[in-house]
Length: 508
Ligand code: STR
Image 1 (cartoon, protein in one colour):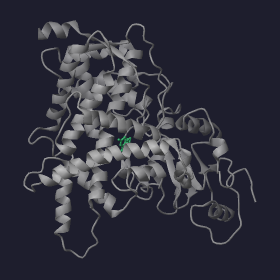
Image 2 (cartoon, protein in one colour; image 1 turned 135 degrees about the vertical axis):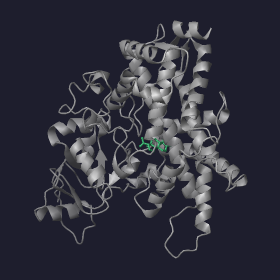
Image 3 (tube, helix red, strand yellow; image 1 turned 60 degrees about the vertical axis):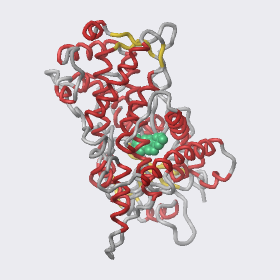
Image 4 (cartoon, helix red, strand yellow; image 1 turned 60 degrees about the horizontal axis):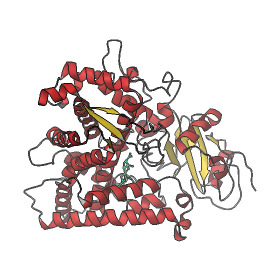
């Protein structure tokens, strides 16, 4: 009955698609399948998945023995892991629609109220409708006529001015950076922002940490959903964090409903309410997408959560690399000095001149992709990858980490070297290798790419115009391994800011 090599088990009546048995039956028919890690009934490939390494690194190691495309059983689920860009692009771009499903995992279902919203919802007309709404309304809003650039610059300038008070003392920079990026996304979603010390902002910091620490870590409860009914610390943390998030969202929704005016749409939540109103008034017989309060809240929750968490994590990584590579920091400062000077703050049009800064941002996103395994995809029909059969309902994990550290595509991939993003004339090259997918690709690619890139550029340029970051005396520089989760975060660290003399001379 049991063979611990490949997924070779058979017997019994009609198998469900995507299960062990159906796989074996099809394999016997001569279809070519990706190499499978040793698997056993019930526990699947659990024994081969035990490792001290984080999953993205463990999968990267398995690439050496099992290749760029291999499969495994996560409990009862058939999962395919992809480690190179060729297969990744086939899944995300060429067959994007077929692979646009999402698995139903316990932690993600809790977070998304059973697959609502856009990040964790499977492909459906409702999902398409929500994604379109976000695409067309996210950047239109903000504070009245204020453009996105103005909005970001205002926040960036306010944090840099505030940080002047904290020079020369060890400082946890990230709380303030997170407040800045939370304010940008909060203006776009809710037309409101947080002052330093606002207790609601502290609640957001706490619940986000609770969620990031527990969601999608392939914990046992995601493999065996019945485990959620047993006392389990992770699931308790997750449920508590979600309850806090929901109480804040509920308040925002009620405020927005109370002040709603279809002639004055100020933010994403208003535009979702408007779409909800339009749908109610539409009597067409065509099946309509779902836009209940639950759907609307989950969509806004995804955008708000993603906007705050990913951008602040990327900034934390950039700052940490600047601490590890002070010469990179000096080079960016020279570039700022030569192209902008000190008399005006950087703006978005400076992006075309600050090649080394752009290269440093890209090299950080390559070295530490914020979502090292993206969010798992699911095949919505029987299909194939690179000629290998992929049955309907298979889960597909794209190992962006391995793609960004592929020795065939990047020379010494473990070395941090921004110049790989520069051409021979020192000009920034957007993507020197196709093996670069920091924002995913295809129909489920990140909706916030434009916003994130603007924030990273404007913040780092302005910040390095004002300050130099150093490791505080007596503090140890934290390493570059990071903490694996749905978002790959660096460990917490403190910095010491030095006000730059040239900047001080210019403003005084
Ligand atoms: C961060 C913590 C939080 O409060 C809410 C969310 C929901 C959306 C998530 C986000 C999370 C982490 C980053 C995600 C994002 C949706 C898209 C984004 C997973 C868990 C990425 O794919 C990087």
